[in-house]
Amino acid sequence: MIDDVITKWHLHMRGQLEGGLDALLADDVVFFSPIVFTPQRGKEITKLYLLAAGVALPGEATEISADKEKKFRYTKTILDHPHAILEFETSIDGKYVNGIDMITCNENDEISEFRVMIRPLQAINLVHRQMGETLERMSPPTAPAS
Image (cartoon, rainbow, N blue to C red; front, side):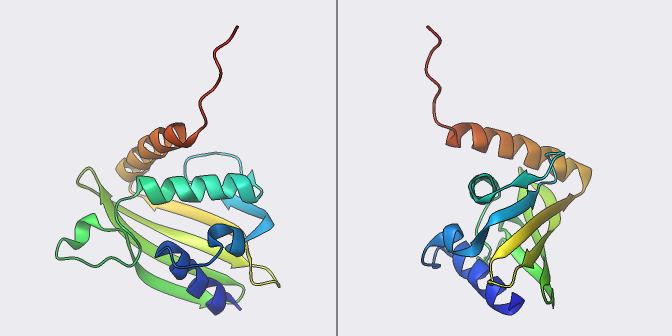
């Protein structure tokens, strides 16, 4: 159950999950961002936020290098069906970022809820800036007003 979902999540993080987030997220998934006040509801908006986070946060979840401080990596995993907590560390602009992904799955082994919490305050501010810039780049250009 949750073990399978987290295995798939790690495959997704390595770019090895066939179907990517579409295969992992429930249609009615709810995403809770550390930056946005209101919950984001639905697969498309959740995919957008998760893909932007993948671009904004340096490294990949499975990367281990000599310079560990600069690579996104999970450091702890707690599983208690249907929930998982994955603690992560990375750095942005030389600043330490620590956080957790709280994941809940449904009876279909899909992610039904995804919460991200980040600390310290400096990290939240950096992630806010990085995510804003990334989401802006990912958004389709708007047509000029006539």
